[in-house]
Amino acid sequence: MPYTWTSQPNDATQVMHLKPHESLPPKGMAAFILATFTLILIPVLALLGTPLLWALLPFLLLAVWGMYFALQQNHKQRQIFEVLTLKEDSVKLIHTQPKAMPSHGIATVTGPKLPNTRPADPSQTISR
Image (cartoon, rainbow, N blue to C red; front, side):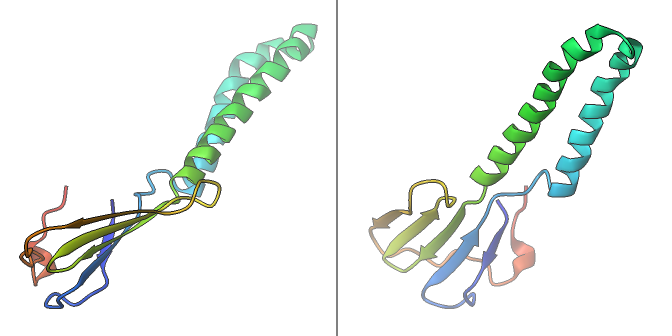
């Protein structure tokens, strides 16, 4: 998940904003749907002028619409946002669901004093 620190490295309270990675941007989704539609139409070209074309066409269009609908639903469900707050004595995670989903979830953990483990230099972070 891409994240950004919104606090200074030496602050007592550290705040991180997290959001899901957008692996399929809107332009990529449009290209994928267009490519799928084009590849489905290749075998259908042989059926031009036959009644079989009209029998298969609704099912082919339903398949393309189903793919578009599934990708749109996936995009809506990825609209989550999380805020991680690290204090010396607690950790708080606020998970915000998409607008169509139920509201926020908050998890708070308290315990012994936690060390500030955030590196002062962002180049010291490990990325996967």
